Length: 196
Figure 1 (cartoon, rainbow, N blue to C red):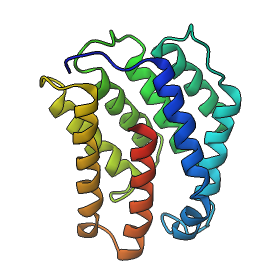
Figure 2: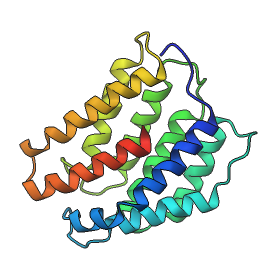
Figure 3: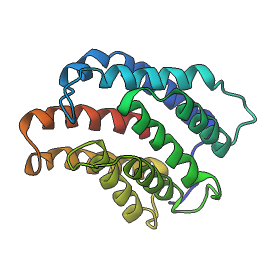
C-alpha cells in the first residue's frame, strides 16, 4: 500500500453510515436467515449489536485509528446479541487485534486486521461452516494480503476487495443450497459495507 490507512474520523463515519444502511435491511435479513437455524432474528441481532456499539462509542478528534478500534471492540463485546451479534463482535475484536501494534503506513496493516478478524470470528464458532459470512471474510482477507505489497492506494485495495467479495458470493453455490446462498449473499453485502 502506498499510503497509510485513512483517519479514525473516516472509519467512524463509515461505521455510522454502515449502521444506518444495515437498519434499512434488518427485515430482509431476518426473512433470508436460514442457516444454521431459520430463526429469523439474524438481522435484528446484528443491528442491535451495531446500534449498541454506536451508542457506546462517541467520536473524539483525539482518537487514533487504534483507539477507535479498541473502543469499538470493547463496545461490540458488551453489545453482541445472539449468535450473529457475537460473531460480529469477534470481527470487531479481530480488527482491533490486527491494528493495535501496527504502524498505519505499513503495507500489510489492512490485511493483518482482516486476517485477525477472520481468525477471531472463526475460532469463536464451535462448528464453522463454508458458505457463510466466515467464507467471505476469509476470501477478502486473503485478497487483501495478495494486494498489500503492491503499489496501490487504500482506495485501490478496497476495489480489489469488493471484487473478491463478489467472487466469493458467486462461488457459494458450489458448496451450499440455493436457500443458503440467498442468506449468504445478504451477509456478504453487509460485511462488504461494514468492513469496506
